[in-house]
Length: 184
Ligand SMILES: CCCCCCCCCC(=O)SCCNC(=O)CCNC(=O)[C@H](O)C(C)(C)COP(=O)(O)OP(=O)(O)OC[C@H]1O[C@@H](n2cnc3c(N)ncnc32)[C@H](O)[C@@H]1OP(=O)(O)O
Image (cartoon, rainbow, N blue to C red; front, side, top):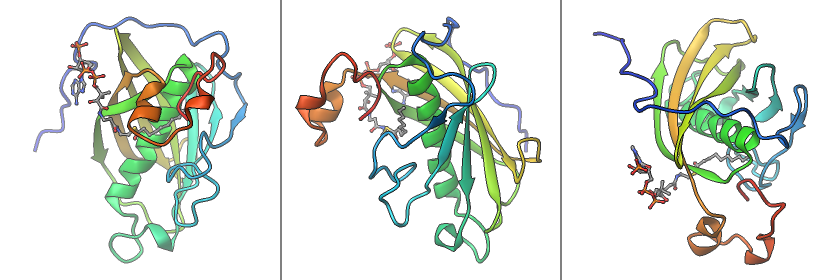
């Protein structure tokens, strides 16, 4: 089976510099929402992704795989791995562009099994912007920033108004103010 991916990004894009208020390299990024399944610190069975700002406009996330994340015995569930990439890529878009955005499309290549007890090091980057469409991709490496690549993902995020979260979800409309520039 061919693993040659289709053209990426699929449309002509611009390559914007990170927003002037984007966090500096080395900044540890806390959860954007305490109950987020991907990064929240109040979700007992969540993924508890830890993210920080990397070099060259990247966002680095670490996902420690536990028994709670199994699909087959001793191996991470693929859907949860995709979830980790969704979170890491969402963080890449939100933190670097400082705009609220939601996942429109997420594609994941699973290249190696990810055992329980391993740590996935995910490096996300922006690949370009076309209007409200933001293209981003990430590699996930096993147990070290330069470990073997276990997964690759590409995603389209769509920039939305903050009202997306108040009208469709339960975000508090009182949170809408000029400083609230990323997802709730
Ligand atoms: C620091 C912050 C950290 C945050 C981390 C969060 C990580 C987690 C992120 C998520 O998981 S978000 C939750 C999962 N996603 C959703 O629930 C989104 C549900 N979908 C929608 O709400 C709407 O479909 C969406 C906002 C994505 C788009 O609806 P709109 O009516 O606003 O726009 P439209 O449909 O016109 O699409 C805008 C553009 O995107 C394109 N598009 C949208 N979905 C697409 C798709 N699936 N594939 C290809 N293109 C797509 C669409 O063709 C169009 O292209 P053009 O501008 O060229 O016309």
